[in-house]
Length: 157
Image 1 (cartoon, rainbow, N blue to C red):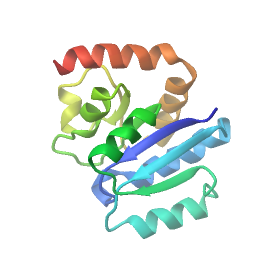
Image 2: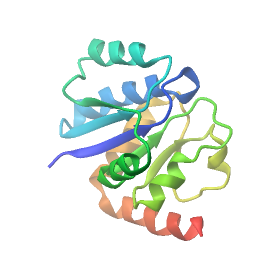
Image 3: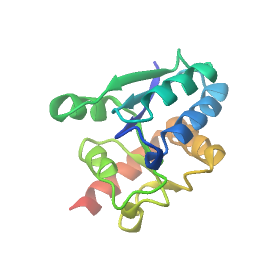
């Protein structure tokens, strides 16, 4: 009965995982039935683990470690939503991979893929309030997710 929101990628400053965690705090304050999964590894991993603890999110955040190929694909399929909160991203394949598996995405306006994908929700990486609002809206209204996936798959082709 819980919804799953996924971050997949390196855990480094340019990926904005710290903003993802801040948005998670706001989401959980409104809807405690949401689980956030962080898949990946990087130089900020310990800092993000400490941030999760400091924000008292340990019950709501799972660290999956780096997932590749079949495990990654299963995680995309299990998630209700993928968030790519990049501070700086030349392109970003994660939302494209997610769409291939039927999972919609929220991406930062600062990512290169934001220029070519129109059927995703977009947010400034620093605006964690708006990121939380978009996560909550996507989880509450399945028609939003269904439309993003339907049109996103068409756009992938």
